[in-house]
Image 1 (tube, rainbow, N blue to C red):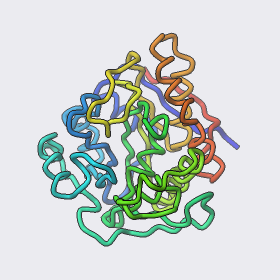
Image 2 (image 1 turned 90 degrees about the horizontal axis):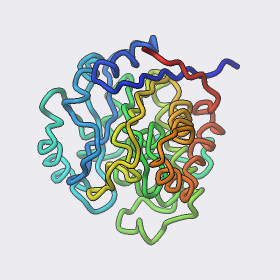
Image 3 (image 1 turned 180 degrees about the vertical axis):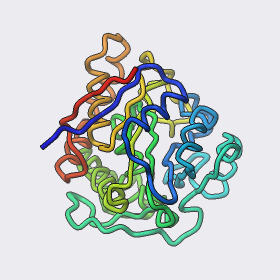
Image 4 (image 1 turned 90 degrees about the vertical axis):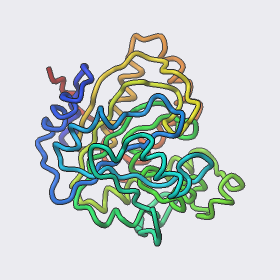
Length: 294
């Protein structure tokens, strides 16, 4: 079996995001969703609309996002739509809050390790393909956040996020923190949910991870820590498992002393298990070839 290709560009610019995408040699068909993180109010590290507008327009995409399942500026449609305007997500390209109104779209996961179904924003059904454009960083619950997190928690509706975080116990947001599971079960639920979105698009997907502003905290944290590492680069692949594994390897192999903070965050939450579980489900491969672009 051939290794998954992961393309790498060190210099992080809007033009190089397009170059990384073009290197994949895949034109995303039909109506293109671009899954991004809208950034919690107060967060300083998320990828800004003006930085990504060129690649979004290049693929003629619509940025898509869903509401959260916890307190903050994005846990209701009304609040989230205000934040979208405040962060200027509607300034350069179309923006679709996919679960702005119900009912959710239910995706089956017949071979799931933990989940047998996933709830995503119903508007996901309006798209033919998806570019997952992720900011790679740490995460207070998953250890790290990259392509697999965007596919799972990112595409899930509020109810779906609750179901993932409770490893299938409940989709009732009010019961979220009363039903937190064993950590590995949560990570396996993330992998299950990611697999359902990958299966939904039947290969019409591409994945770009941007390793800049690398904090131990996620963009969902309004008081996120400052970046602990220097920027690393842009990675692109048709395989979400490979692109996340490559980012993890770049962190571990880095000479930046700040990597210790991020590695501690990842290992304290067994973050690599999401990658292991997704690979086991056939979402992608941890075996990859890193191809450097000039």
